View 1 (cartoon, rainbow, N blue to C red):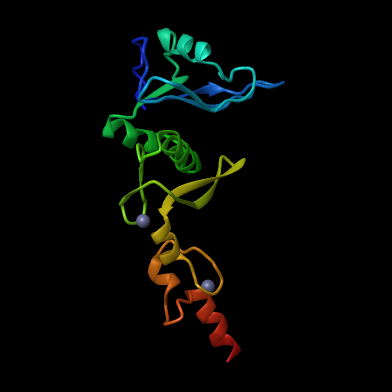
View 2 (view 1 turned 90 degrees about the horizontal axis):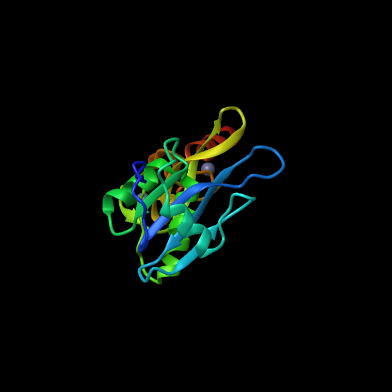
Length: 188
Ligand SMILES: [Zn+2]
Ligand SMILES: [Zn+2]
């Protein structure tokens, strides 16, 4: 996501936009997303609250004047740029990366967008968020993204627990994890 998006974008194409939407009774906001596809057609991916933009007019108006965006309210991803796609996954929370990538690819009907698995470093388009941690003592965030193959390699066959280290999840022939093996040992 490029923050130096001061130039107006009059005819957006292959452009994913993340902006501060939301806004209800209080002063809450949340990230909203829209897309202009390869034909320049508008798709509202997610909008909420009074600041959400669900019309092409609103979206074009936002992109027509980004001059007041010093405080980073709008982030633009050029979907033809690998650097931009990499930047998007670095700047966006893991759950949203997985969800937005899936929606964008559904709209395109092809694998336009991807992300890098935090475990095998392969470029994938689907997976599962992991590595949950408590953010600011308020809410739970995922810290990592696993592709489907890493997800199964890191998950204990017996208890279903995901382990950061795949070798902890597969300590015997039955793919049991370190905890399950310990439990079994103490029973014997
Ligand atoms: Zn992987
Ligand atoms: Zn286990």
